[in-house]
Image (tube, rainbow, N blue to C red):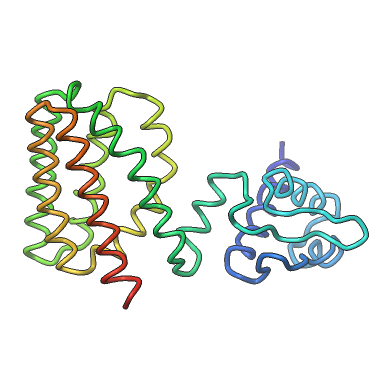
Amino acid sequence: MARKSLVGVVADELLDRIIAGEFPPGTVVPGELELSAKHEVSRMTVREAMKTLEAQRILSVERGRGTFVNPLNQWASLEAVLRAASEGTKDAAAAIQLIELRRMLETGACELAAERISDDELAALRGHVEKMQASHEVNDLAGFVEADLAFHDVILHASGNVFVAVLFEPLHRVLEARRAETSAFPEIQEHAIGHHRKIAAALESRNPQEARLAMDAHMQQTLDDLKTYVLEA
């Protein structure tokens, strides 16, 4: 168990170096001897760590040429992709693709929630919107982001589909980082508050189509705001 844990540590450290840009996509990672000296472990541990990253398609071995870093779109580990998105440098493509993913999942979740959401959950939604408003008025970015994330979590769980909540759980860290980046703009906060009120009202009406359209409009506004205020900055 101890040896397996050490392999995981080395794999994580090597992944950190890849995410930090030390080894960009298409480049060769150092050999076992150099890595074992750098990470102060045996060559066997390095070999197993690299096999771990190879299994996740982060690395690929080309016989006679070396071990190469694959492009992000080839990685097979959701956790690794999310780490790259949250810890790496600002990536416009990744930011847009994250909203596209949210749009696909959250509009459907909101549609399901319209017929399944409880009165207590509706009350929680209203409370989160009011906290967003109060945080906006006193320039409390952390409080705003917390209430924003909590609002969406209520809807995901109210959908009644366990797979939706499970899929979104690993996204929490990267969403928190991205929300802190975009919500720093007061204009974006104002847009978000307005759309969250409309989503809550649509859910309160118990109309699945209205709920879906309200969430879709919010996702479109989020994408427009990202392009206008963040990516163009």
